[in-house]
Image (tube, rainbow, N blue to C red; front, top):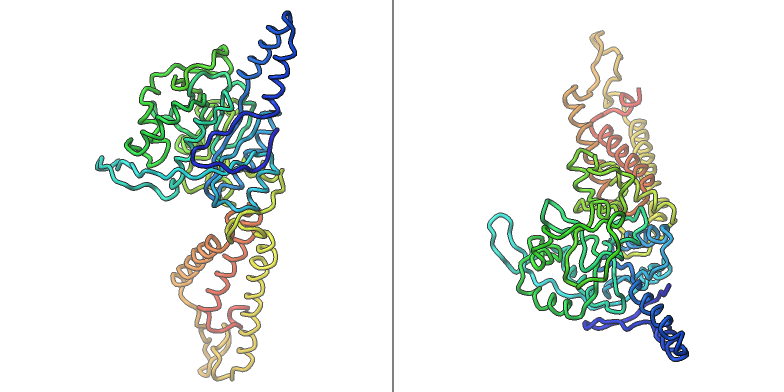
Length: 439
């Protein structure tokens, strides 16, 4: 498998492998009259079967997703090329890590989003798009990877659970449909063609997109997908490569949408054991977020796969940056303990320095009239409200400061700590006498 980093311009069209070309030329040149036909047939078979898996990376957040994707692909036993189209804004350290994971990292110039987002409410077209889709049209380069006869594209937020070799037999352009007629472009089987690529690039600036990204555009460009025949890699006989623009639908198992799983009451519409690719399509909720499995239990499947890799953090920034585990161990973990200890120390010290007449009588003490004094604790409703507010503030602070890319166990431990600190702080604030608080 080839791996490395290469630089390509906007006219991205990598050439075929030099070694393969030399080998083919040698076979044809050295073959005799009787053996030439057989050698040529073997060479043709090699070319037809030639294919690669690919993904796109233009956001630092998805680096860990691409790394886990590579691991899940290799776990199926594939020896095909793993090609990663990467924009220059991804850090060099991340690129090096991805290369070590087995990706053939290819630096490409991003294709700007033309801003043909169609408003769903008013049906108006405006030059705008969701910020997360700023470079998603870079995916169109896949259609120009003509050194491969077939390219199976997988979004970086997918996880491969079973062998995908059968997808390379799907003719033309293949994808899974959603909501009856819409195609989800998280998994695509592409027959590269420079002609089709040029048509797509030309049409992009003037074609509407209901998502504001590549998915809406490709659904507009290929409106006949809903009526396309089904190709099931388990039951459909392998066919010819097919025309690049011929359309075929893939079964749900090839792109199992976690969003639909959630809508269905945490239930798949197909047997769980049949799923080949799981796609984490929950918008802002991604499986590498430590709290994701609490909302979507299937995210635990992704997190378990990640735990097998023992990945180092290589992306930039405090949220996904290098050393987030070190940050958690030496800063976020001991800080609540230290703050709570300091608070208790100063409260005890202040209480000892107070004079008796300044102190609030302790619960159960006798006042001057011989009656029992009442402590100045807040009332029941006030205490409940204060406690609820403290928990909410503690959770909010936890979500704000804890790096989302941490392993789940670290995230939960830190959340418990910081929330407990908030509750303790609130208790100190509403209780005017530490002795009452500790009694």
